[in-house]
Length: 221
View 1 (cartoon, rainbow, N blue to C red):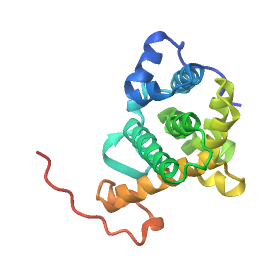
View 2: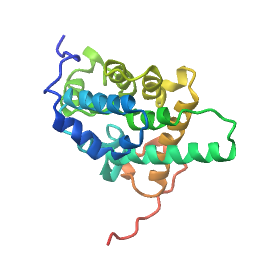
View 3: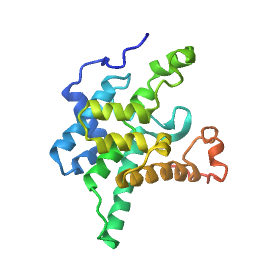
View 4: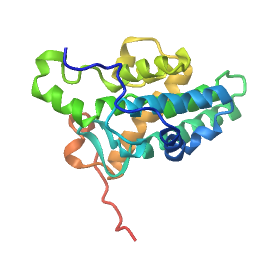
């Protein structure tokens, strides 16, 4: 056994927690104060168990080396998914007020769906997995699985751990909550649209995007 998953690499400090809110200001829109704090605690735990100082240091990729943004970080993706998921939820509620959906759970799930990426993208982990994949796999756990672990350890409710797990490939093997379906749909669509808009490195898009014809970007001012 060559790695202890439960050990933090550094102490969780107030400055780490402050950086979480700085990088994901949408946390302040969660109406439940306890849930809001748990999101901060969970991300601080995830970061301090990794080599990343803050969320914006995590590369803007769907998976390591796959769907890589030409510009932007994981924080940009998380915030975009949060904004667009809420827009979709609010439109449904406006036009179909008979539906029942927990907006706080949706927002929290959107902000935490990739909370395991600090683990999966950690350069230390990537190096040791590549050195000998026969020991623990490559990766040993994807960000969706590890993210569910982080959510539960940090005290987030089962609904959020479910979204962290169900938003990705693993969601094909379980029944999904309504809130998870919203987050999952927006998350997947965001990467597809980013590719079509020309925001992803072409070599990172893979065979899954055979239908995409990336558009050239306008010159930045």
